[in-house]
Image (cartoon, rainbow, N blue to C red; front, top):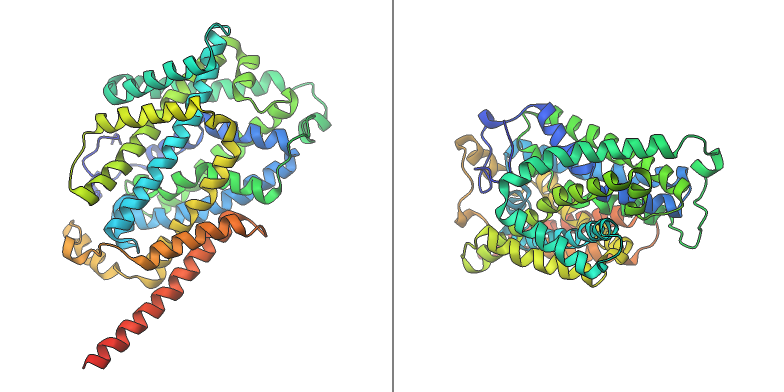
Amino acid sequence: MDISMNDDFVYGRVPRAQRSTLFTITLIRIGSITALSQFMLGATLGHAMSFWQAMLATLLGSLILEFVGLGLGLAGVREGLPTSLLSRWCGFGRLGSALIGLAIGISSLGWFGVQNGIFAKSLAYAFEGKLSFAWCAVISGLATTLLVAFGYRALGWTARIAVPLFIMIVVWAAYHVLPGNSTAELFGYARDRATTITLSAGATMVAGGYIVAALITPDISRYCKDGKSVFWMMTISIIVGEFIVNALSILIAHVLDTEDVVSIMTQSAGWLGAASVMLAVVKVNDINLYSVSLGVSNFIHVWSGLRIKYSYITLIAGSVGTLFTVTGILHKFIDFLMMVGVVFPPIAGIMLVDYYLLRTHRALLDATRQEGTLPDRAATPFVNGVALFSWGVGAVSGYVITVGIPALNAIAIAGALYWLLSHLKHNDSKRVSEGER
């Protein structure tokens, strides 16, 4: 089965007959994680940490991603629902799910700006500096936006070319750059120690770099056939994307003494490296813009009942994302990852607690799953203030508490607070109903 963005199950369950094979699902997941941003993350860690510190940060961050992705992914395969729908019956209600969609959309817009900045730098390299970075950013951003909004067929061959070409260039770069270097150069710190990253910050960056994808694991896992497929999909993709790609990019950053992914690729493979960067950006940014359109569409629909065309939202989002690039979001990459790494984990903590511990709507989901339908509007709460409050407290705690790993702190605090307040709310409601009798 071919899983495309324009499938028929955006607002409903994926039937068992439409589930796909483990091989197909895992390839899709690996393709989403072995992206340019992942290489950029590894290069950033490698430029500011020793190899073993960077790999330890990768391990800690990956454990968070595995926990979040596997927990939500198992819920997704059971219910056959994407995150945006699943969150309605996992604590957040219709309004809460719309806010989650909006938050994911804003994050994806930020990623669009970061990725477009990389595209613009590659374009400037191709023009040998004759065009300024700002003009290159405008050209690349608007071209990608138009392609995503109207060029669906072109995106197909771009995806088939970009992912394998990028992986080949990474392996090529490692093969030509790494041999002949000393152990100190490969496994020590990069020569420029002006910028350093702590272990907890590095782990949060790793988690932040992929936490949105972990949060929306049900979007893919709903096509799996069983829970075992979800486990292997998550584990294999993390091993390939986080450990192998990160390890190579960390080592290359040490040898070349730079975190600039465009410099790494162009120094290693010249024009072919620059071309692979640009194609990889197009491939990733089509997903970013699609995520923005889904999140914003859901938000608008919940608030107003309107259904805005995908292409219109894409054009507006692409223009805003391009503005982000021109104003310098690429230079705030670390800050952006740190923000993402504490804003989104609390959502996962709340959904996991609600689905597996409180089981607020499990009976309703079980009953409607047998019929292949969804709970109706009357049975779906409009908003759950306890979930929104717990989300906010979890995110703030991730910023404020510096002990440990902020992303993990945010998950634990939001989940625990949601569990406690939900029990107190339930007990109060029970006492009121008993008093009325």
